Image (tube, rainbow, N blue to C red; front, top):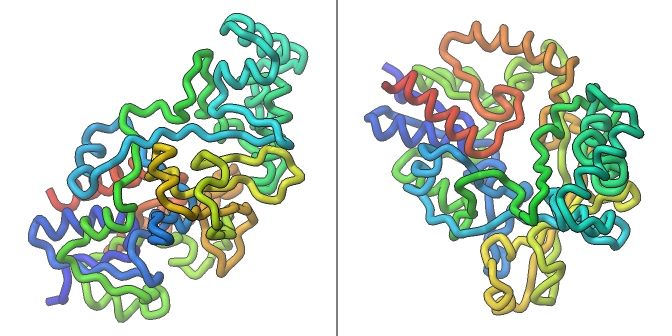
Length: 373
């Protein structure tokens, strides 16, 4: 008899949801994580009374009622609405692209004027069937907005010219001919009051968790403890990169405490020119203190500049580069993963796909239905 029914590698959302459900059905569960903290990339840390998103901004949004009801069992969510601002060389524009953006860019007032402007620019560019991100963006919003608000930001984000990136990356970009600054087309949206770490603590309540434990360094020992492993780390790392490295984009953060109550007046400001080295600045207090007066009660603020970079071993992998080459390599790794009888690969790194938080939770709950009944 082994000590545990399930060894869960990774205390992020996928692993924590599975751990909760398995424990609630009477399974003996052990969760390990190589980091010194739980919550994976949604980890938040209290700094100056502000819950700082250590691994980048995470805004929960979903149209999935089951997932929304589920997370509300473990946290109270505020009414945060994601309305980023784009800064192009000191010019400020509303995101997502909407009538405020079009008015600032072209002076147009009506939706019909904005649509006509985009149609003309699409025709002048000669685009009928977009073959890459650049063509897709111009097709959606025209050349002016592409050049000012998309091109520089996207090339910093991905480290590649927009003409070399697949069109699907930008297809889900909201474009609205209304005065609507809500970035997400989601019925439910918010940030957990008290931060994501508290939410994950609630998910893992009563479950054995061991931190600072690297599964891959002592894999045989860990495997001997449990009947089955739920692995949420990088799939190529699991196999020792035997087929080569899958590519990711990584992000570096420069976080500062500033002796002022309000630095930029918004949670997120994207810097869309190519000359500014960072992609955006996050001011963390505005995720949880939605009203100006509430935020000003805290005399200091915390900001993080984000710098995108090519991933290399030792860096934190963030965004899978789901181009043709990497997708083909992942397919070969998935063949190896499918042959691992007692290991289930899940989550963003285990499945090498970009997952929003709600999709991670939905995927974990679906696995629970299959494995736990």
